[in-house]
Length: 317
Image 1: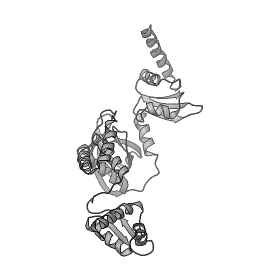
Image 2 (image 1 turned 60 degrees about the horizontal axis):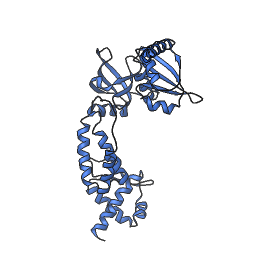
Image 3 (image 1 turned 180 degrees about the horizontal axis):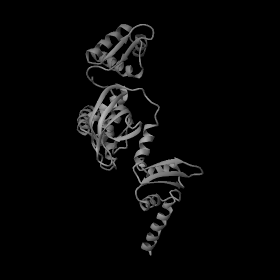
Image 4 (image 1 turned 30 degrees about the vertical axis):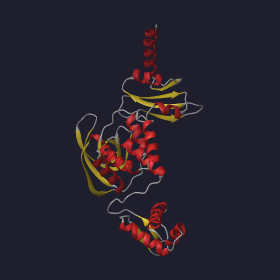
């Protein structure tokens, strides 16, 4: 058998391994149309290249691709290569400190080895796309990794945190999950000292330390929904509930999750829950959506809408 044929077979083996949790030598041999002995040799070739192919014996044993001490070369199909390249282009303008430069380096390496046809498709997607986003707050990548490990390992985290009043205090938490809105990163965690669920902005955390104290996971609300409610409702003086004559998905296209929450209703209506410190601003925000609307609460919002309508009427006249 030629070197080219052997190389092609080894690459096919590398592409097969991630598709299942484990492969028997017989199954791999059948897929590759070779003997079990050839499979064992090809596995050794992959190991020599740095791919961590693990073998287990006994019933249910076989070969599986695991994690190694270093990152070996990746084998991507056409769709995976395009998705990776497009994602790296987006990450280059992201909100994780240092990730932009790392993404650009990885994109440069990938672009060098992409076939011309795939490179053209990636650039076509990039050239046809604009990113419409406000300025985000950069987060240190090491902080993300530290909190992610704490969530995974269920260990407590201590940090100094500056709330809205700007006065930093020490917090001890049991972290559950991080949530990003695209502009900011948040941590949902159980606040040990306050005995309740809290949302913490990562850019306000300082001196973050993981402890050795492991905690038993508690039943908790949905992290994304909890953070959305905390961000969109809790910080404001007024919380408005407005019934809007439009389907929920249509209103969600106009109201970002960090601004308001949309609840399903009946007969083509939905309920918008939005917070604000100024009632007339809330009235104007709802009016700009362009749909028929009914104020459910607070009652003062109706009076504010009337005042705003009077000024707009005078301006139009």
